[in-house]
Length: 422
Image (cartoon, rainbow, N blue to C red; front, side, top):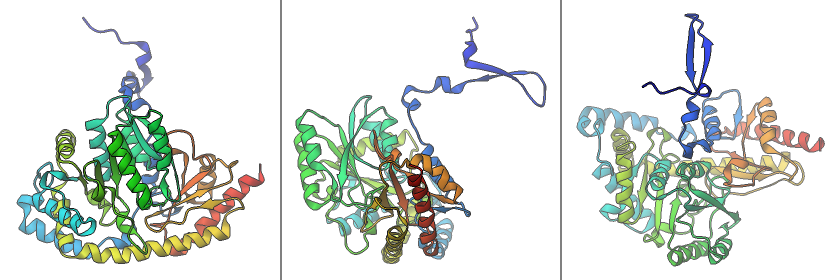
């Protein structure tokens, strides 16, 4: 028997070519429940501006292409393709090529003072892959995940994609307000996971203090939740290194999600996950059921680049570049922002977090900014709940030095015009 088709599921239209009726199904009617509430438009819009040439864009957290080692990579690629195609052009082990894991392990030992055991480290397809694997492996519908408010919007999407109940805890100049989290835990909050970006945070640029890191670890051990530490910007401190990582001080309750996208090349989509062997083994299984393995050519190029000493040499120049741009941005903000506007002063990373007077709606003003050929990301998507209506994330990482002042002037004019209308 032929199943009846609900009229609401189809619409009928004439095709331009044949002139006959064609049934068009409403595929949105069949969406999985967990996807119906997902956003994603913000990230799509950010990536769409990656190649824009007529807009001064402070929206995307893109590394500057000047930091991409094209001549070195050309030589490495040619050598690997000619001399090692059986590895570089083949599938790899799900947990990553052994030599690549050995390189990343050695780098963690040097930088963090802790060496992950063989089963405590895997290679991922960037940091977001690690977050997806953790959510896929550990989140059931309704499980509580605590994040900083504001936080990386991709993380909010990753956890909500598996129907997590995402809760926000505020931040201040010392990072996550751990004392507020402690009060919530005492009152009965029981998260399964806490996600944090302790170093030069996205979107605020703020860094968690050493004392709060210690207090957070103590809470994780007491209440039994997993800390997921995103270290995407940890290597990009301007003047000094941030405090010891959470993973290096508490590998029993922390999974470190790392990425080489900001310090190598995002086109390769390389990252890592370091944590308890029991957890990493589950993430490997989850990866087998998603992309199976990270690209072998990218893995081998990363290894060769790193073992040749190029990574650490380039980081010196990258830090200098981003520190200069952060300084230029701060000068421009001081000159062009209306009274009552405040912003953070980062010591590393890619971002400044701007807070306009409360009456300003930065989402509504984003269209006016685009008319002036300037782009930013409004603050609202960075919160799991309410918040961010008068805030803006400004990424200085890819804006040319000579365009920063003009771009900030345009944003200032947009804010001033909005305030004059109030």
